[in-house]
Image (cartoon, helix red, strand yellow):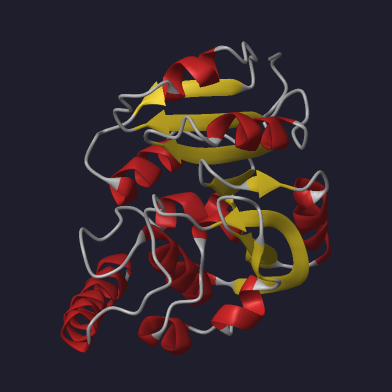
Length: 239
């Protein structure tokens, strides 16, 4: 990479992703410009994930050693290491369409949005369609209150302006995943745009780190209580 400012950073986390990561990384690189970057924070893979990434031998790919403290802290570390004006979040096992970055950047250029989330086709491990629209399946829309009770923010569908980066740290240790926290903070500070265009295949399989299944009521109540405390502390701290 030359000395031109990085416009787009992709923050990916990896852990034992050898089955899918080559196809995903290929789809990402086909979206990137010469001075963009994909930061891959590996959380201690014991399979061939790291060697697969290293074989790309592409200066835009930055493979780093993650904190090995779980998914949320790994994403926090990957985002901290991003230098781009726009930061896209990314899982290791999906597939991006060739126009994903261009479409999302077009929304940023035409709106004052601080965060953009786009729709996706949900597929299984064999690329069979499970749900033709993630948005419809999850009844996605913005709003702090709505996403406090039932989160519809999903990290792999997100991109945000770098100005949001320092507003979201540190991620809560429990009560929510990183994407719910990022979405709520983005809603608190600015406008969130939901792009109803499918720009990737979102893969669901037996090794996903997140689940579509609803947690037991007792766990939901506990998580919401803790999340509410974190939001209150955040608002007080930022005043």
